[in-house]
Amino acid sequence: MLKFPLVLTLCAVSLLAGCSGGSDGSPVEGQYQQTVKITELDFPGITGDAKAETITQMEQAAGGGTGGLFCMKGNDGGEQWKQASSQMAQVLGGQCETLKDEGSTTSINLEMKCSGTAKGDIAISMTGQAHAQGYDSSMAFDIVDPNSDETAKLAMDIGAKRVGDCPG
Image (cartoon, rainbow, N blue to C red):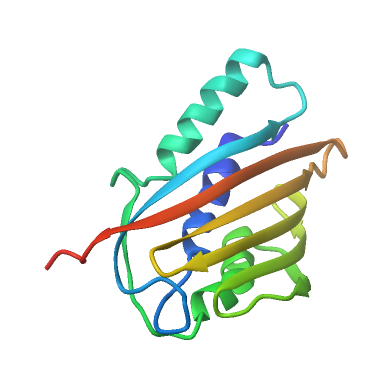
């Protein structure tokens, strides 16, 4: 069975898949509040109570103990969007391949497959759109356990809104 720490790792990766900003319509520099809503969690053998508890823990953990607040720099031409696949590969390990990357400086439309990770083969899709005061995106993971060939599914909506300037 897949382990809960992988789920937290995937949530952490979602924080890395944020966007950056400037005059191209992407988010401007500042402090943002991120929200994460788990839209699907289907692990083989998970009970209803465990599922509800896991969703609550994941959504809370995605804020990193900061209430979801983070600072984003502007004017990097969408590089954080474009780096999502390499960041994902570094976190998951194994061999990751980008199957589709049709994003821009203000959007992400990415499909990847990672093979040989400690948790099995993982198919990932990410879509999203940035705007001057934040972004809205979706991520989905299909995780095939190497020991049982059972598939777990995880999907989430991730959004952020600018709440002010970065402190300091």
